[in-house]
Image (tube, rainbow, N blue to C red; front, side, top):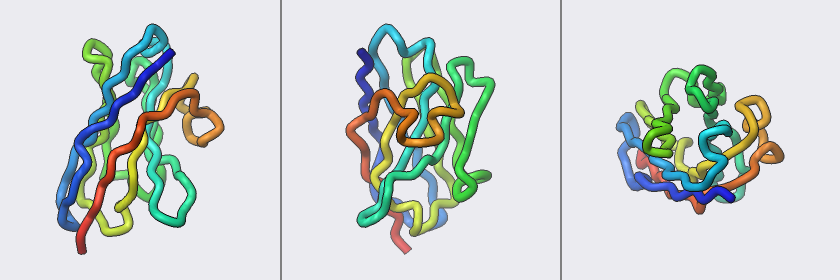
Length: 124
């Protein structure tokens, strides 16, 4: 069993930065990939970024590549999403996720556990 709790969401102006955190607990944490999805009102949940257990493999959606950075600290059982040069279209609820590997974690059907979500609002 894995539990995920996100934090760090809030209101930020376009062009600004924000860092999301996801604290994980459970015996399977050290052996799985972790990532982030987001969902805007009226839209489907979409993949944002993923990182392997070791941190050696990362994946990003084209829409955030070069602006967002995913990282993890296994000693703290925490994954981060550093968001910079934020745009209005980044506004969404951001969800932390766990899966078997980064490839499977690029789609919602590869997610084994979800966090509760944290709201990110970017003003224009």
